[in-house]
Image (cartoon, rainbow over all chains, first blue to last red; front, side, top):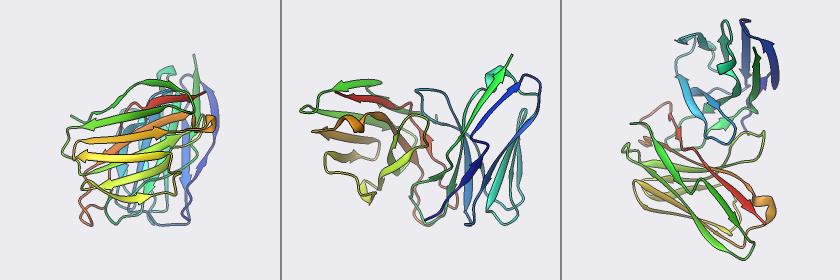
Length: 112
Length: 117
């Protein structure tokens, strides 16, 4: 069974601070996706990383895929209250249509 | 258009009722998924349909019955549910080209909040 360990599970910080969320596994993934989810809504895809060492930026969010494709990180610069939500990493092992392996999620609260 | 739609948004049902959840996408995706999500937990995979055929059933009880009438539609038929089945039910889709895609990017619908009394 493949596992994705996501940390921290809960994070509450002041507006304007920087933060990093980590997603680690002992397994290799073909790709890793990051989602953001609001309460009562479905996850919204933020980014997909595919190549080992890949870095993608989405405004103040920076995503990195580890060289060995076993881990990933999400860094938020100058966090804003609108960044509040549940952040989920999800790994895909390859082989066609298959479910994603989700981390347990990071509940992020940005205080004004 | 990366939209997956789900109806209804909310559903309350008794343990003897029969109801259905519906999901639709018009992105030309050939793989569709049902996930179940309990509060403050990540989504858990239930079923995968690939090219309208059920390819994965994650040991889901038979009171949940999936159906894929065509490549754009996915249903989940519910019968004799238990209160512990109350959850957010999420539908997702991906391109699903078997063996040709290395990343299987999945797009989720807004979910149906199900309450079983």
